[in-house]
Image 1 (spheres, rainbow, N blue to C red):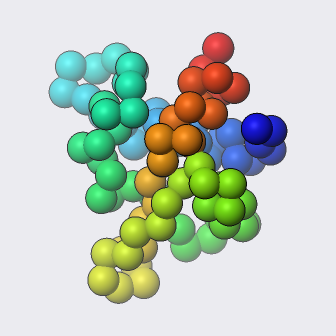
Image 2: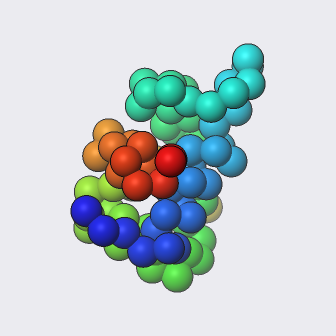
Length: 88
């Protein structure tokens, strides 16, 4: 699956900027991201990048109850794209 540069940047941000394991390092599997599922990235103005990821099944939408708490999270398919296309 081809992704745009902006989509790749957003996936990379989800994986790296928001993944902060207690022992440092980098996530090695999708399960490593499960602890940040609920408080991912605020989607106030992403220029439509999130919508494009969602249409491709690479990210999911989660509502925290109010508009300011809306978040996104990487899906297993998004993780696969990260591993195969972004993490090289």
